[in-house]
View 1: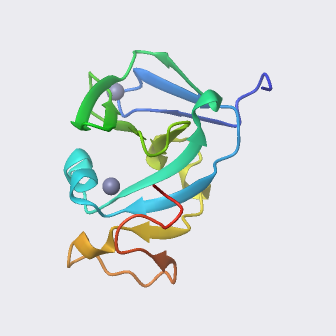
View 2: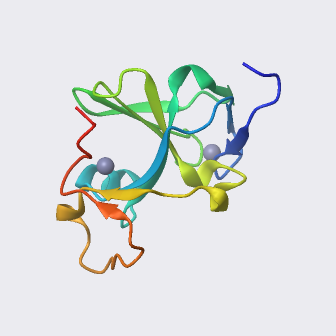
Length: 138
Ligand SMILES: [Zn+2]
Ligand SMILES: [Zn+2]
């Protein structure tokens, strides 16, 4: 672990800070109904990191268990979505990309759960699509 974080970010109100000390494993969009509800948006965009590379400071994110195997976290003050953690990815944390100062520089690789995407979301970015999760997910 280096001293300087590779990425820094914060929620809308600034109470929750995140620092990441390693490169993302992947970046992708999720169109599943839970991500739509959790963000009140058409879809969610995540970057997946090794959990050991992610540090929170400031306020501790609040946790909501959206299913038996999934924890979603959010800022208790402003409600910004912070992260997704699922038992299917035991050593990973999936951070909502828009938290980051350099959010515009992330390069999404694909779309998960396109079978439940909103009909008004038109995908013409040429990225790979998956009916549900990518195959390498369990
Ligand atoms: Zn906040
Ligand atoms: Zn999802």
